[in-house]
Length: 367
Image (cartoon, rainbow, N blue to C red; front, side):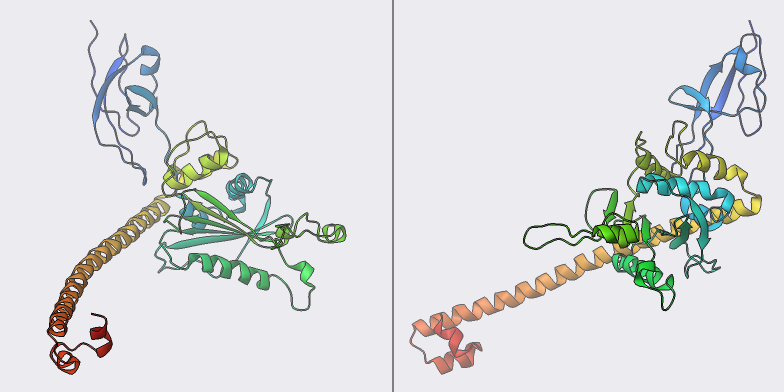
């Protein structure tokens, strides 16, 4: 009878091989910033053909043995530090290709006022401004904190790009096409969908007809519709989407929310992200900075939640106090009206009723 082995499989440590296999005790951990499993101990047996594999790490979930999934960097951090490298453009290209439904090839990244490094940055907003091989512009923004006027800020961002990227004296036909892609981690506006698309159309107020370009305009501007000349907006409300899907766009939204890329991901760009955005590829200094970033995001969300909770409590308290005051005032007014009614029925002069109750002559006449 072979000797039974029970050992913990930690980083870089493997259990010893026996003639029939091996037994191991595994302590489960998941350090993903978005998913937490409880730490627990699971005992299982591995066949002999696996027992000899050295420096192999396993996890066990629901009594299944599988390779440990890599941990990936959050997309906002990747945009800030990694995706600005031309060698990593494939991740952004895949994301934009999936979202817009057409192949996007990024030529270069451009500077904008808010995408430059700031040591006092509180991780509220990150953006990337990209230009494709057709000269079209893509402003990708990640917003962590709720902002009341976010819709107006989207408009300001695209308007600023329209005016910045045309030279003084150039014809208006040289105005660039701008796509505003907004990844928001808060509940923006009303609605239950996770992806929203906005564009400009002109419709007849009598027949609902969409105003179109003339054939000459289509040839001159190389577009099919009037809306192709105007900025377009995409809003991805990713905070509550955590279900894996076979739909490429939903796979991207799942990654944006969870920072996880399952092995069967097929969306363009996710295979590149799997290779480029692993936490294990970071240097110790980069990893420490990244974990500080995660801490800041958690603190930011906690501050928002606390402020909202306190605001609701204060609002309810003020409402109750105002309600009691209004109730007392209404009660006194009704009592005065009832007194005035009885005085009027008793034949008392209106001037005396006004003197004793404080009511106006018009109010007494209605009693």
